Length: 89
Image (cartoon, rainbow, N blue to C red; front, side, top):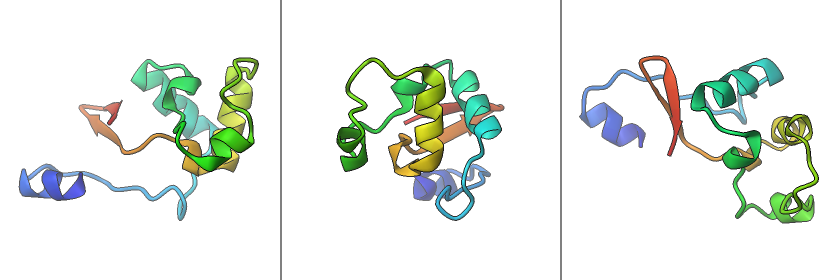
C-alpha cells in the first residue's frame, strides 16, 4: 500500500503499531471515524482470534477494544486515512 501511495505522490504517515502501540483513546477514535463496530475491525484469520474465542458474539465492544490493544495483530490493516477519515482496506 505504501508503494502505491508514494508512486501516486500522496503524502502519508505510516504507523507500525507494534513499535508505537495504539492507545485506547486513539483506537476508539479510529473506530469512530471508520463508522464501524470494533468487531468489524478484527482480523479473523489470526490464531489469537481463534485462541481467544472471538468468533463467539458474547464479547462487548469494550472487551474487544481491550483485546485489540493487548493483541495488535487482531487489528485489520492497513487503515488508510484521507481528509481526516480513515478507511480499513
